[in-house]
Amino acid sequence: DAKTTQPNSMESNEEEPVHLPCNHSTISGTDYIHWYRQLPSQGPEYVIHGLTSNVNNRMASLAIAEDRKSSTLILHRATLRDAAVYYCILRSSSGSARQLTFGSGTQLTVLP
Amino acid sequence: NAGVMQNPRHLVRRRGQEARLRCSPMKGHSHVYWYRQLPEEGLKFMVYLQKENIIDESGMPKERFSAEFPKEGPSILRIQQVVRGDSAAYFCASSTPWQSGANVLTFGAGSRLTVL
Image 1 (cartoon, rainbow over the protein chains, first blue to last red):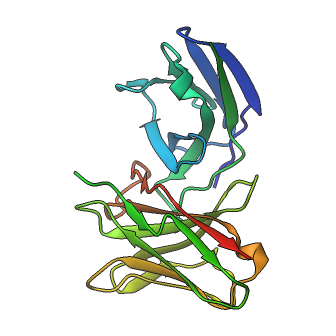
Image 2: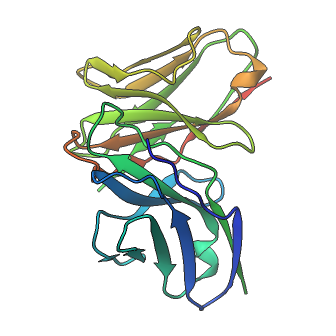
């Protein structure tokens, strides 16, 4: 599976937008970009995914670069509840592997 | 609209005992994944199953660990002769059958195993 690179940690102020970057320079044409997050002492939670076009849902927006070698998860208005580890994961439509492979993610701290 | 249900949420075992962790997938989901998260570490894939079939067990330790997903009932992760190093959070996830990389996993709240 193609790898992703994320900053180890980021800070944000409450009620401000947060942009979480992810680099995936070796992405292939069949790789979907997924974001999950894990709140303290909880299981991972799906946030959003996309292939080529930008995506919006009730939780967040996903901005995908034109060359697909990077993407940004956007939380429009961070709350204290958004403090979590955010994982950017590539999921290939080809090959035999079906599991999600988690890296170390970005630890987001939201300051009141 | 229950999500993925895992039980027990917390389990304490002494060294040498057996641990059984159960996972009921989300309604409409037929595939189950198990992950392990050691203290202060990342999530590691263990096994991927559908009913009565193990699809991928490449992440399972070779000894003492087994998983099943019977035709009826929950998926079970079984750890025999537990050791202190098995203390971890075990997460189950479920999904619909694989069609593409757009497939999304829904995770449970986890089972936290402590081995004394």
